[in-house]
Image (cartoon, rainbow, N blue to C red):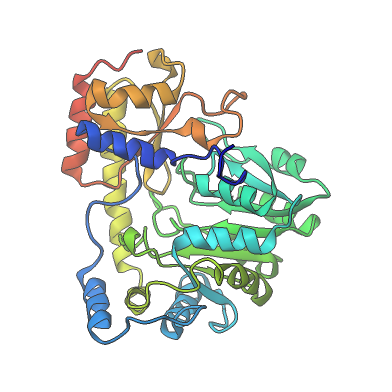
Length: 390
């Protein structure tokens, strides 16, 4: 008998760990895992060093250091006009991953249904399972990856507790528009649902698009828990400093779960993130501008290599369809790619409940463009020189 509990039995390593290990083993260019290969702004790194040398090396308060909670509240007010009480409506977490875990463990009882956009970030499914919830996916289908309001409505039942939203969306790169957000708000209000919204890519949108938090829509502030982090927008993914904001009772539920996970973390990093948030949006705006150029560079290279490629509207990721090259699945393609071309990508099929359902992701592959232009150029060169047909 396996010693592992049923909740983790069969999970194994994540697809990101598997493919990153494959990149190391083969010397491939890693366009799989979504982290940048350049550091964040020197001034916030200096702020972290100053905090380390200044004695901020013991436990921070469980909800987060006051300076960071206040900076998060100022960021939400300045950027979106959202007013928050930093003492009751903000909690700092160990990255957005812990915010997701705290939200689902704190709000979902066994048997509660959670409506989630598919394809989904893989921690969503793990934490819904850990909480004993029941996943109800609503699929965003290629090529536009739009949210169908009718499918959203059909996914809701009397047992539905919350909608787990993600925009800008990983892995498709879709930024939900006003009509789609209005559809989510209408369903949430009509069925009295909580909305938990993962907005870690909030600053990283392209072609003039702007992210709109769903909590700013009429009737949504009182039922929306918003999650984000500094990692993506300030290029410090390894710091793992995130947060949850919203009504005090929703934030309290996250805090109640979080206190038994990490309790607290990153004491010297929290004041540095506070400093980053208070510098305004200059650095994230520059990151988004660079990412748009890197997106265009990678998308052009993927298309030149014969891959059907969809243009993302935000995030770090572009999606391709490999069926035109004769592959039975994105997984087969990705596991062969390091030897074929010396490049690693992620098969999107792992982000679907049923990747063989109509419009699902059996043949889709996710590529990260949050890499230096020279790294993308080398990956594109390798892809162009390789035979990518099955």
